[in-house]
Length: 547
Ligand code: NOJ
Image (cartoon, rainbow, N blue to C red; front, side, top):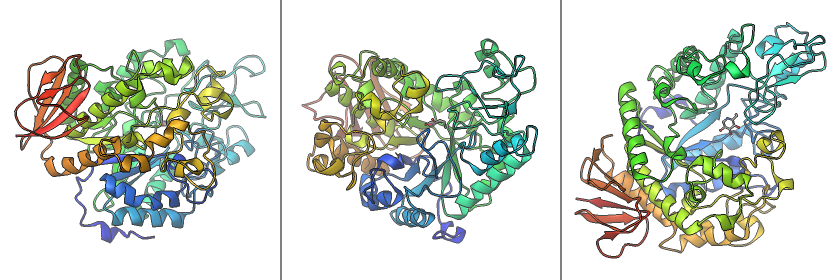
């Protein structure tokens, strides 16, 4: 193992507070061995690219052994690498290469559920109802005379019932796919196991964790189980929902914090918790995970007052707990922001609706979408706090909306009786070159079909184009490093359609979200999301200025 704890001691413990974190979806990033699936050596090959891009950390979506029933979020073994993606040695090599390039490593932890191929679940299936092995999961007898009705009418996140029957007649709970049985966090053995998994990766030198479904672990499953119709949002707001965002989930994170503090500097963590904004702070508590994703801008429509309100609220929120904010526009679960912003509605719901209607490229104003995406990215990169980027957004990639139905992989598609297209369109393997096999993704094919337009948005094509999105991201990250100071922001300007703020030291970010050009404020323009002509800022454009 490359990184002993002692070699980490010079690291600023606050490195995560204003970092740019780049999300790698390993199966679709870069394929070293040419089997059509991205792998860890593929990531190592691209470390120079990541370094040139200027990111501070890489977050890897799950690379663990998995049958890929949910893109790797169905984990067979938390302490290993999927053989198709490499080995633990490959992981070590990758982590060393990233660390040598000054890039931190964040791994994805999936504690709400294992896969149905995990040793514990196999053991549970082989064991008797009521056995110790079954108590690691949520097994129940069914309702009805023969127990052949599920224990409750709950639906899973991908559609269909949240209970699956096993041959001896019992049912187990899966809030996601049936291949993702929920763990029973009332069982101390589960707590112990996950503390040990944290240490396994901490000892291997990772710098932090992204915690999947952080709001789901603690559950109240006392009988009688509530009916789905009674699971109201008010319960969530009181921390009393039986399944989501319960107050007692934070006891788990307080335990984990003790493990994080065993390392120097302490391991960092960010919660993926789709909770009401008023309850997000608990996940970001310094005694808990320390940071939580704010998905508010990702879900917002294109509107300056809307953006300002979200920014203001989030900065107030983080001030309360002392954490730093997190800004996200795209990830592996949502329609890419370049596409969303090219639709009539521009929020995530509009993205889903567009996909449902066929995801046709002709229904997207791709040029406007890209201009807005570039402007929004520059805006978030100027905000105090952390920015999370999703692989391919630095190329301005659009969603691949028209994947043939017979090539879809996402469980959402299968579980919704083919009514919801799911998330494959943002997970298509990246184009590194303008031609050749799988656009340079690897020597084999790509596990999801790549469209012809990838030729124009490949890394190779964009390297050579001074106006490309890739060149804009690189320059933005370089300037951000240079200009970024304390986590403070002052609102500037009066125009309702413009988001204008400054950071200490005279760094201004101005985004015109209205329909008409506006006059730029005083100052030297150091970067703009498109070429400027004179002192006017066109619609859908961000400029950074220094004064
Ligand atoms: C959130 C992940 O981001 C998503 O991809 C996954 O399907 C669910 N959690 C279940 O693990």
